[in-house]
Image (cartoon, rainbow, N blue to C red; front, side, top):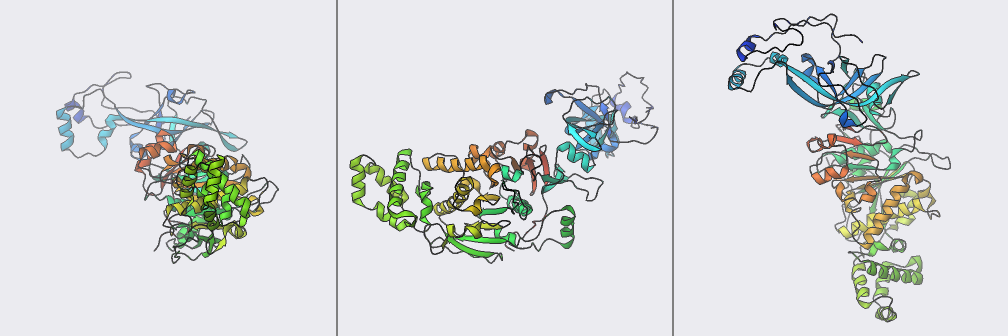
Length: 595
């Protein structure tokens, strides 16, 4: 280890170990500290031991502090990454968790005279030399070389006193220290305090990648993703950029085939169809930069908009050029998902009655039975009387079920092809299918459309005897914006069945090549059984304390969330890397906005 040099202090009149105690007047004249170094300064300072030097199994018991020299202090930030060498060439990779000034001399600066003199003179930075500037370090990992390859292990060694501390500026060292994969899906650039981490390489930024191969487990896309952010945080912009990276990727199935990933995106604000088109705000220079970094960009040609045909609504598409296909929900889909016509909340007794009525209806009419025929079926007074007299369904329960099953005329059996006849076009290897619901004014109808289509995809993915092989045999991501509207807590009989279905989908996703991509501004409203299956969380600005608490990210990063600017985000993906802060791209990689 090379020393920073031998330092001589002039004018102090104090020997080693003595305290230099001066009055305010005396110290007014004592402003110069001369340090004559042998050689050239390296790093930002040295490891300090005045208050101990400890590495422990429990993080809170660790105590590593570094003295930062005057010329380096202005560039040091909370969260910055530092390296401390060991004598044998290994490196301690650490993060700054606290910064403080401490008195260099034992003098009282909390006095009227001192304060007023400081207020009257122009500060030129030299007075900072009167103070020690100390950084507290959180040891993240030990970096070591194994056969020429840089690797990391848990912190198991204490650094030496006076070891030179330097900023981490090498891409390989930082990525290894933070366990960031070299290859994978691009999410953004590593940042500290909202500023991108700079390196000496070209480009001078550090790309954050999400593991996307089978070398160490399964691609994280099939272990589910959550994007959480408040209004104006840039969550749709960020979601589009991430989904654009997945489009065109291929994944191996159990039979050895490698079809392209299909994405089905439910779109409540009619924004994702624009992924078909280029973003005119992306300059040629920016596009070349994306190419250099291996970032997919530009409109995605294989984008199709599947428009739900709901009576009394119309869909406009002047803001994108993607192909449109209309579809309707056939009432036959209710046979396997009876809760679709539950309407308002039903208790268990009422739900069982509804199930019995639907079972009897489809037994009589088969899969060709329509919603109009079901209403006629329920309107039969003889049926009501029969079920009441037999004790199977009380007449009051029958009436409650009938009331709640009414009012879906605009949703089922519309004037368009059933979605069950469009599966080959809807789930396309390598294709993006967008289901807009912005044009549907009835929230009840919107819920039926989204849950009916999503349940169809999930049922086929999880089935051992699928009706549609295309769904079963294609790697699939189901994207759901405003997910809190559909996957909230199960406070009713039908709600419990919806949550149960999506929970099972989340649990079986890795095996079935099924990924959930949930986008929300209210993560606290998503059912816990689904939420805890999500491996990757991208958290943008959130102002609500309950929402921040719900995403369950480390407290050191959670405190930054309310202050994040548009596009800034925290990534918490334990199976991919250490929790880190990122800056997203300043532009959307596809068309975005109605301009």
